[in-house]
Image 1 (spheres, rainbow, N blue to C red):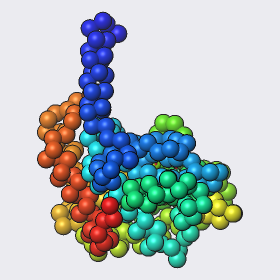
Image 2 (image 1 turned 30 degrees about the vertical axis):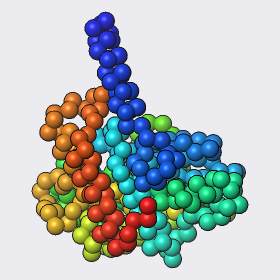
Image 3 (image 1 turned 135 degrees about the horizontal axis):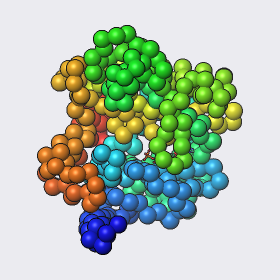
Length: 329
Ligand SMILES: Nc1ncnc2c1ncn2[C@@H]1O[C@H](COP(=O)(O)OP(=O)(O)OP(=O)(O)O)[C@@H](O)[C@H]1O
Ligand SMILES: [Mg+2]
């Protein structure tokens, strides 16, 4: 690396850090609706994903806090999006309830037995809207991807091979066309780096035949029911990813469910085959970043207030349409 390019990199890094700290809003602010990029709870931190912060609670519980971080083009943006955490968390809760007769889930309501009185108070008054208190289980190391429309990497795969992850498809499909039957296209769950597509045989090798059949059938059923419901509310769920875990020998649904972060949400009213579809929630941000011709390298540009507000409104709109409920903040 030349001296000049090193300096440039340092400058970029420094800029990135300045942006970060300007927008850093730490949890436990008085106003529990303040947008946060990072939570700081007095619990052992297990990890931070792109969007969620995960804390251990005792031996067998976890606290999953959904922050307001937004990622686009695979990077986390400097600005948090107000209410995004609440929306994502409560969409998952909505689906856990929606599917409760089909599959047990990881939700636990015994937090008072695990948290100190101070934490209980903070959880109830400030955290609950964006957090999930759950049973910690052994995750099944397969990402259960289901695709109902041909798009993204599936579309590229189809153009090259006529198949998507080994599923042969009819010729002449158009980009973003609805598939006759949803496809189960699992991926290995990697602890580092990107997940890798695996076929059903490899799924069986990883988890055994019985569990492989169960998670495949459950994934297709949950996706199909969720998709039909969402469509009746004006939202197309093009594809998604479920995660399952094992609790006392039974398969249960864990992680997040049919959220705009784990799925592709498209607005139904402007859906049209033959080209890529706008994202229900992230398109405003993507368009902005494309408009300013960002080179997709750090530093990540700060979003103008107007873009942040419009994006926040898009998330609240998804929630309202889907659930018909008021957001609990
Ligand atoms: N009930 C549970 N028990 C054990 N682990 C769980 C449970 N629910 C979710 N998890 C795990 O917690 C982690 C949540 O991480 P998160 O999705 O926030 O980040 P990530 O998957 O590492 O990255 P990304 O931000 O790209 O999704 C996942 O590894 C998921 O498998
Ligand atoms: Mg994840």
